[in-house]
Length: 256
Image (tube, rainbow, N blue to C red; front, top):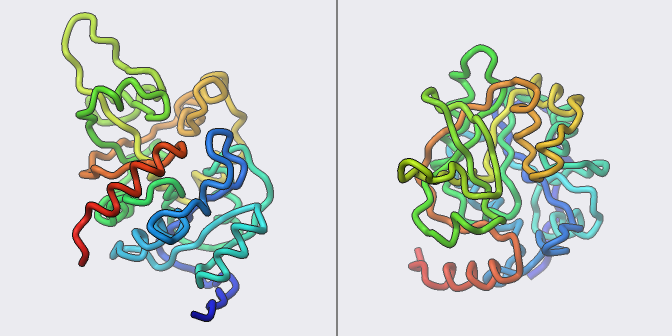
């Protein structure tokens, strides 16, 4: 089958855009965005989930790597070539400077089973942000003890208004006096353009550098991150072992 060619990024003002940040050099899994899942690159599956969402005007991949850019062209996926960045959200912030929109949904490129309904929920929540809150971050409750202990799974604790208090790769909170619920931060964030501009110009704090969790940048600088509960039982792919599990999960799903 002949490859299709992706059109250059559309710079028309849009309402909500999904941006999938992808880089080649992940320390735990180099080349991860192009790793094959069911015969298609991982990033293709994330792109498909975004296309299934109902509230998005468009979906783009953002990358600094020519191999990923070329794969997007072959797959007919809109792609923005960026500079090198510390985090995926910094990469999304560069896109926001070039692609005008009311808001941007950062869908991490390692979430091939992310729920389209969850993407829509983040999009809707962005239109109801409280003053001082700069981002929406989806989360779900963890049921698996192994996932609670897994340092590749980021946990979050929230206040009574569901604002993020802390993110960590450690199991938080510590169960000293009660049996807590453990919440998994999903790789699904929503921002206005103003929030992304601020994010890009804030320095990384010691917690973000230590944990490697980019949303800690807002928390450390005193800005609100609204945590949004969603239903999502998918699997993030952080390692080759996760990819093997993802292939098993994909093949176990009913054919539509």
